[in-house]
Amino acid sequence: MHVFADQTNLDAYVSGFLWILKLTGASAFFALVLGVLLAAFRVSPVPVLRGVGAAWVNIFRNTPLTLIVLFCYFGLFSTLGLSFSDELDLNNYWLGVVGLSVYTAAFVCEAVRSGINTVPAGQAEAARAIGLTFFQTLRIVILPQAGRAVVAPLGSVLIALCKNATIVGTIGLIEASSVMKDLINSNGDAVIPIFLVFAGTFAALLIPTGYFFGWLANRMAVKR
Amino acid sequence: MMSSTVLYDHPGPRARVRNAVLSVVFGVGLVALLWWVYRKFDEAGQWEGRLWRPFTEPDTWTQFIIPGLRQTLLAAATGMALSLAFGIVFAVGRLSDRWWIRVPSGVVVEFFRAVPLLLMIFFIFYGVPFLIQGPVSAFWAVVVGLTLYNGSVLAEAFRAGIRSIPRGQSEAAYAVGMRKSQVMQLILVPQAARAMLPVIVSQLVVLLKDTALGYIVAFPELLQRGVNDLSANYGNVVAAAIVVAAIYIVINSLITMLAGWLDRRTQRRGFRATKKTTAGPAPVLEQAVTEPQG
Image (cartoon, rainbow over all chains, first blue to last red):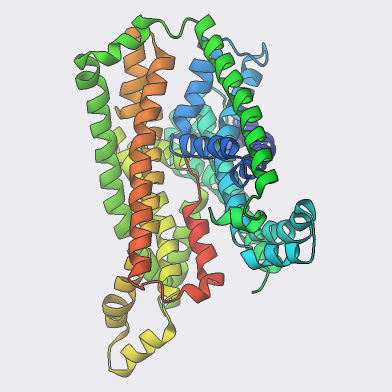
């Protein structure tokens, strides 16, 4: 454990995971907003919107995230000149957030859409039969049930997002995986402890999160 | 569109008019947006013929894209075979009656599911050489990483699949005198594997996309050869990224279509006899599939 007794290494470790958490937080927010909007597109009666939603999901879900993140850097930033900040770290951070958000939004969209699909059609028919308007049906009958059904899939999307945040290291943000790589390269005698600390931190963050979402989903589930 | 029937009625004359108007409004907006994106690319000179011409020349394909694609498919195929084996072993391990098999299997599966794939690949590529005093090839770093992660996901999927088989099946097998290992081999695993077929195929999409992480350890797969090396020669990173992305999208869409076809096929054959119990195991399955790593 002598590696982490060194203050600079410890600082690198902390800042690496802080970047992961910041990436996860901001991307989760944008992906959720965008994903719910796309899901609304995909279930709307307007064919053009359905097409946009479907195209988004098929394009971004089938493209490797590494390619999307690289494109954000070499395409959006280097070639097209999109820049968020003069500070290199912060610029890479926001480019990473863009990549993670557009990618994760596709999965959020699918999770939300599958949640809406779990509500039996009879529920909406009954709501219309007693004279509720479209928005009343949505607000009182459909969304409360759909919302409960999406807790588990959204939980796994969030967990995957946190792990995927490591990929932003590709474009030069010194996040946890890059820190681990550097520490391994300079401390060949402590390879296993270094890996166990980094992997263990992810496990300690994500395994409880997984159980929490499982518990919450179970608690919220609409028993049919 | 199952969802459309949940949310609204079949449109009447007024709703049809309204939908048509909204289609036109949003359609125009979409075209304007695409035009704006096109203009932005144009301003940066990205539509110039010299950037796209390489893709009409056979050398680009034979020297960069096809070799890269071959490595990608090779890594994906190897990873898939190994992770299937890993998944079966650990699914059975987690269902064991002996705690000293069940608990370690559970720890392994939970651990590798929680650790980012990139961390695994870095450890194998940069860390393991210190331990074995010799180099590890980028190919094996990627394949072993893929195996550990996807194998763990598949183990969870298999476990859910085995548990979704009605208990009467194994009770009947025990009643005719089979041992536990026989019940597993002859009754449970074959049925679970069959019911899990669409899940397994969808996981292949995840695995194939994850091979792109090989880029980071300089494994010459499609992303490395197609975007990095190709654009180093022609200076057309945007064009190369678009072409390579299209290749990934086509391959993965084909695999997804295969998964959908398998799903319909098994459904028609009545292999979803446990459909009623979807409230139980099915969400677990979906959770396993929808994990959008890399």
